Amino acid sequence: MLVDSHAHLDSPAFASDLDDVLSRAREAGVGRIVTIGTSLESSRRAQALAESHPEITFSPGIHPHEADNPGPVDELRALAAHPRAVAVGETGLDFVKNHSSVANQKALFVKHLEIANEADKPVSIHCREAHGEMIAILQAHAPLRGVIHCFSGSWEEAQIYLSLDFYLSIAGPVTYPNSQKLRDVVRLIPLDRLLVETDCPFLPPQKFRGKRNEPAYVRYAAAEIANLHGVTLDELAAATSANGEKLFGL
Image (cartoon, rainbow, N blue to C red; front, side, top):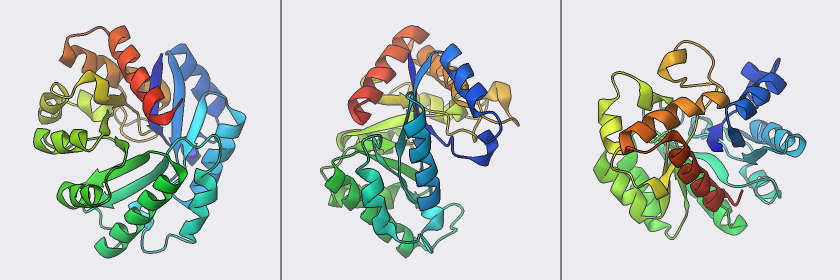
């Protein structure tokens, strides 16, 4: 079994064929999917999906892109307390697109950490070109637990996240021809600290570049990681599924 630890099944990209998407995921051996909220509205849609599909759980959050106008953030508390909620986020820092101010991103991120602690849930973290600031905030609020989704940092940064009791999740870019630096880092991450994800409908693996990503395609990232670690796909699936079950209480 594989766990897709970060998907966006509430996306309009899946509005017309979600049942077929889930069927293909099951056929590909994907037994659990964590669908991730990126706004209050998105989080409510994710909750509804988790309530109606046994293989789906959800994580409510407000993406850093929305930090300048996040809405009533305290409403996340009720969402995080839902029995099908297994984490809090997507939250974090994005200094690439800078859709929101740095100050507002940091304040919203800290709010998510507080809500996650209150709910005793891990955090699902987005970090782009902000690892220094991210690490400083996590160190200041330790102890925490969670996952850095679609990890793309250095080995030095990976070691700090690991020391803070975080998992590192790897997505489709590990299969891209220009991602050798990422593959070099992934090879060093211990199997008991790895998760796999699609971030669908975004970031399809190399075989499907230019097309919609979906949970069934998590196998391609998993196969590349297995190759990097010199283990079989079944061994990699068993390890990452156990990690997902431990982190999210699946």
